[in-house]
Image (cartoon, rainbow over all chains, first blue to last red; front, side, top):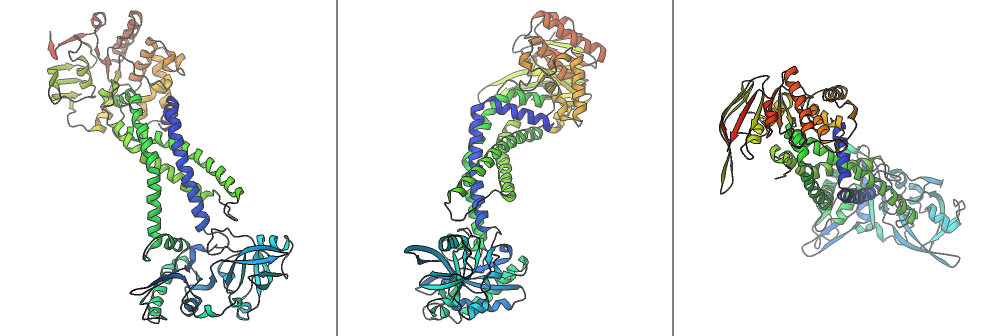
Length: 418
Length: 221
């Protein structure tokens, strides 16, 4: 039976080629955009080098101090993280905690040439929380940080810029008016990996000023590596309990009364940036809901288009519907047949969309629009695309299929659709 | 086999009520070949649609093999149509995108059987109507008479006990019409298929066992 339906489905597509083209165009472009968006989200949030443990990693990325007349939101400061978050490493559910700054642009001068680089200050634990791919040398250690050693880990692009691609370990690099000895070189990290991308990393203790040590608000964040992903909810709850304790010791209690922050996954951390207003308890869930609504809204127009085209095809096929009813097709059977036909159409459109997405991503990666980005269609993305196509096929086929199945056989045989 | 008791069919719109059939009583025995005749608009096709369960009477009862179908739902009606009835239409109503063999298979799609069995039955039905050499052709490649023979093959492929033919020779010339009629007579004589045929042609009607005449929706002698 399915073979017969497939034959009919392909023949129907060939009947009115222009409408078929419009349908396939709409489906493939919709899928293309959704696949590109999914590939981008996957690139930013999926567990990839160096964030290979993203599934069991939390970050404290933002802190809000609020008073009756003042509100300050920023990355946490070293003082807050060192005093309240670092001690959490003793919890049995936590493997280790790293502190690192956001990437800041620093200037270097080499042979009269000005070079701008993104630099982070980090402790020695960073290299054990994140799994950077070292192509030369190794990381600096906690002892290096405690002893204030001026050492640096650089990426391949920086090695190319400063040392013409030659081995760099042991050589000196100047950045932000300071000189550091290169101890390791890592593969480039895509720019959109916002918690780990940089051109060079140096120990926290090499910061020019020590004022950071007392700050509650600053430009640091903490990366918490749990032992198991199942421990994340417990760690989040523990962090909130610590926050309630920290709230009682705010540095300026007359101005600020409450402290708000979250131990967030990568996705939740990004969601907090995009969701306006007061921090919410479940930013990840709200962001997912928002993305889902956006996706459905984006799919609405091509879906309506496809529904209309399918409805117009009822006229063409009224006689066939009447014959099938006469020879024993129930309403349910007809709905199933037409859903299969619509699925065939959407799967063909999806295949075209997938091919287009592969081409666009290849061109995008080659363009260098996002530094070190390598967006790709992997099996997971393919499954997302397939799921979207199936959902699209069913969603846009249900109403026309239902209308077709309700055609009165006598009217249908007379070629009437109403 | 077919029993209609005080069957009426009325169509209502906001302003007008039209009586297509009025108080029809009809019994068709197993193995009978009857024709239904009357002027255009007298209700012949409506009667056929009611017997074929494609429509429901406004009042009265329709029964097949002693079972009243008034309370049957959509799935039950579909099952009866599939297993007990076969239709032959004046316009043939073949699916132009499907080959002859695929068209004939349509009734069997709604039964549980393998693709192999389905194809075997379709080929047997086509052989019965003399179209074994046209199985891969498409309807547009056939003459009117051949198309109607495909339609007959489709109607009999499931071995229904009852065939309902709505002016099966109406779109054919006399020679082709005679060929079609010959096939129907053969089905009735050799396989005891009950046939109810709507026709305008008295020559065709003469070949049947009995003629039922309608006028303005009523049975007349």
